[in-house]
Length: 407
Image (tube, rainbow, N blue to C red):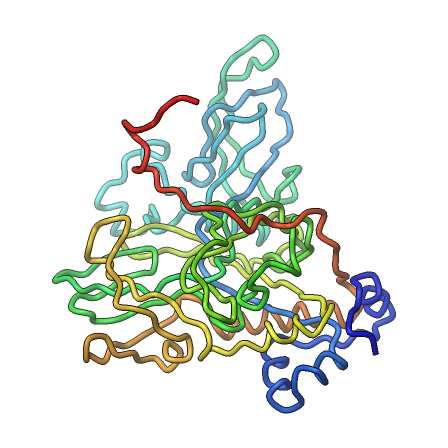
């Protein structure tokens, strides 16, 4: 058999329902038994998946025109502000947008106690409800012009009563991330959740060796236009993600030692499932979005197998102390994902309990669902139309300021 395959060859096998598809966990186990060369002979596609918080996410919504027409300049969906600086009835709602109390009236202590206002609700919850087919209230204020004479509009919308409704997520799927701890004296409330004082706990967010981008460390298999599993529907890689940093330091196996590559993703939210798109709330931090994403990797050559065979003991993340309120925080070194997944790690001689933000069980289920789609001939692979950049630096805003000069 040739040591190279092509995506069209693999897609033809998928259409005939003859493709051999493994989840990345199945691949890792099989390589232990049969080796890289034999695994390459047997498998056509490897499916990866994750289900984790991805706060740099949001949805584009087109409402359709009212009669008389309105040019929306301010808008709230269930009290959560949506950005309206586009065309007349185009909106973007971010996953971390919080309820605007001025828009829904002052919240009293009685309202809070009785649950009349959900202070833990945000943009991610609105997106989830729309995907689930639930009604969402809309309050809009317009800029009155000759072609848009309407000044305001109040209604209720569902995914069936709006035109376009798609996720556009500027930053998803960190290739790696950090482990958060708190070496200070008081509890801290962070995007990783609560961190207890005196190294009371540690939290990590990446699912480790089953995560998509750990298994394609140099972004050789994916690019702009790659088809993926997004929120229970079909999505695509639209661009590099914000804070994309492929130049992160790497181990000899090419995996990064900290936050590295990211992806911008897009997909039709009307075809998604609220099972895989869920609003969430971090105590005293704010709302976010839990999202299921799966990426299939075509097995084009044996190198694909070598990269996907990586184990949790071979990848690491930095342990970062959030008690220092600076952009660059001190670390307690690197820890392997194998150690993190035991539920305990040792920091300066102290045993610290560890928990993941990502659901490992649901990450596996995403990969399995994608595998089923491909085996049934429902999902074929796409050739990227362009590669993702591999030379992006990571700039901090405070490097500029008064030192900035004009070109």
